[in-house]
Length: 171
Image (cartoon, rainbow, N blue to C red; front, top):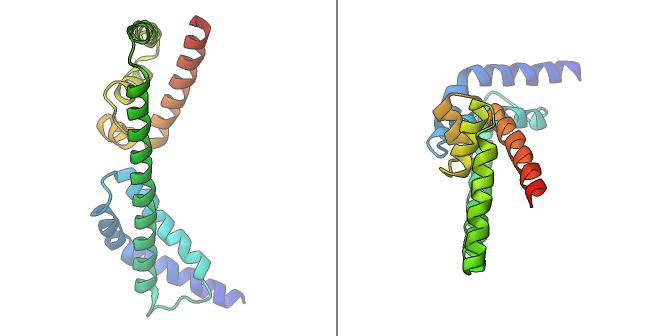
């Protein structure tokens, strides 16, 4: 049992060294965000561990491309579904805010938000502004500022939490 497991791990290790650049290019052609691509390619090789008893050198390339294709399809399906939900929510928001009273409230809230935003640390302020006002995605922000995706996520999470608490105190 140990020798089969060791053999599977050595096959995966060799495949990683040989096919990582190829799989990376395959996924990168379909997905723009560099960090998402890196995560997906890593997932491709992690999924190989699920098939350790079936791995052979002759079939590893087929496994890799099949797994990569399926992960890309899943990612794109989720991505476009999310975009569709955002668009729908935005359209519903536009339809629901039609009166002058709502416009005044929205302007007041924007003033409050910008006031609190000015007190944020510089990097958090920049990330929050890019997300909120420039409508940039995590990937776009992380690439533009040359930060890791997790750093951008952390700044956004903290910024949004602080902003929610502040606005709820003002209301």
